[in-house]
Image 1 (cartoon, one colour):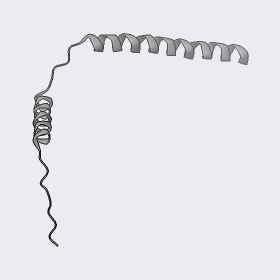
Image 2 (spheres, one colour; image 1 turned 45 degrees about the vertical axis):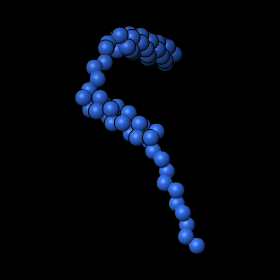
Image 3 (spheres, helix red, strand yellow; image 1 turned 30 degrees about the vertical axis):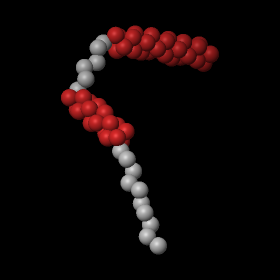
Image 4 (cartoon, helix red, strand yellow; image 1 turned 180 degrees about the vertical axis):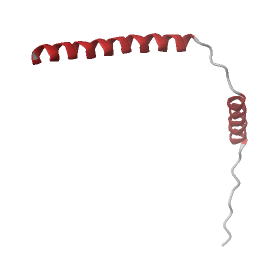
Length: 68
């Protein structure tokens, strides 16, 4: 009796994991196909970082002259 319970239990759990894996795979494929809109905050951050990178490229370090 216990042997049949274990066999059926593992079969049900294995089948559940298989169905979950297939469902997750299909959901991931659908998510990849969907276009992602860019938010306004993302655009502002991207422009801010581009501006910062440009400022850093133009930055000239001031020479420090130590008086003795």
